[in-house]
Each structure stands twice: as C-alpha cells, then as structure tokens.
Amino acid sequence: MDYTQILEELNQASLFDLHRLQSAIYQELANPKRNNLIKAQLKIGQSISYFDPQKNDLIDAVILKIQKTRCLVSNVKDNKAWTLPFYYLNIDDVNTDIQAANNAVGIPKSSLKVGAKVGFKDKNNNDLFGEVIRLNPKRATVRINEHSRWLVNYKSLFYVIEGELGDTNEQTFIPYDF
Image (cartoon, rainbow, N blue to C red):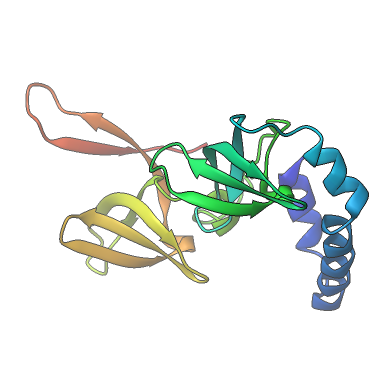
C-alpha cells in the first residue's frame, strides 16, 4: 500500500468521514479471521518488526509468547518486553515510510521519525541542528545537545545530513532536500 497516497486522500476527508473510516478499520482490526491468519504465521523466537506510533518507525523485536490476538515481544535494542496486538506486527516487511509532498513547508509529522537529524532557525535566524526525540501533536522535541531541548513547529524543520569536518572531532550538519 502507498501510505503517502492514502494520507493525501484522507487530507480531503471531513472529520465525520475519518470517524466513519476509523470505525470500519477497528472492526477489521478485531476481525477473528484476520487475527487467526496472522497468528498462523507466528512462531516463538521469530524475528519481526512492529510499528511504534510514538516513534513513527519500525522497531525490531523477537516473539516470546503468542496469545489469542496479541503476542509478547522483546525489543532487540533494549530487551524490553511488550504485549502487542497482531496488527502492530509488520510480518510482510511493508515499507511504512510516508513521504512529504514536494511543495510541503517543513516536515509533516507523518513523515518524521524519532531519531531523525533535523535543523531549524531560532528567533535570531541562527541555524540550530539536532535530533528528534519526541513527536508531539503540534511540535517536535529536538535535542540540540545534552542540556538543550527545543519544541519546534513541524513547519520550521528541515532534514540534515550528519557529517564530520576534516581533522577535527566537531560534528557538522548539512541541510538537504528529498
């Protein structure tokens, strides 16, 4: 599925349309036939990825236990265990990225991921660079350094490429467009 195209269509929908679709989607997520099809493909010890809505990204995990409509997984990076509904699991290795429109100002929340390297201009028009650490409803939390975090409107952000300068150990960030 092309999530970018679907999101573009949904942007034209009314709130009632979205509510109605949400209801229909929830019914499909709870559909026992669909859940049984997923369950039949799962095995304890299987490596999978799941979609984390807070990070807007896929997380690698291993299945520890399989239940009726959920499974217990262990995050590969931090070994934390999570009980997830089957519909979180990306067992078909689907590309979940949503691309920003070419004419978009800033970075849409749906395209941004926790961990992304970004930049923005402060009130004095200075370029600041950092890493996204949280996706909030209206703004992203960007860590500039160990002691500085900024809440930045998504419209003000741009992607950057992380790099090194010559012989020094200083990091530099280079803005780029997709």
